[in-house]
Image (spheres, one colour):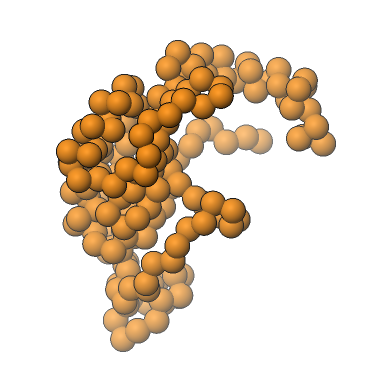
Length: 170
């Protein structure tokens, strides 16, 4: 058994409409579905208590096929700081081209960027920004490796599982 592809990542947001607008206006990701969850399901499945708890769920499609599943709960809980060295999810990432242009574009949109684009020892370039709720977004330019990974990724995985990365599969 194995997974077919990456499907989605879920994030809880403070403002549903603001989130939809942010990801559409900044990254060109359209809202493709919305559902309102009945209060009894919000209580039983999500464990949110209150007189009439609510949860609006939206699906935002990212070019390439992945989806951001967004949740807006009432009543809301305050956000917690995500730390790199704590077990759990830390960020999401978008593959892009021309990081310097993206950096300038995001700055012009008022998006908080944590650093200028930099090059990793393995050759790709990246930088991090935050959405309006403080969620970390990595913008990554894989350069020619985007195509190499797309075409040869499955073959490389097969080879590396049997060679230099064998110790991780024991």
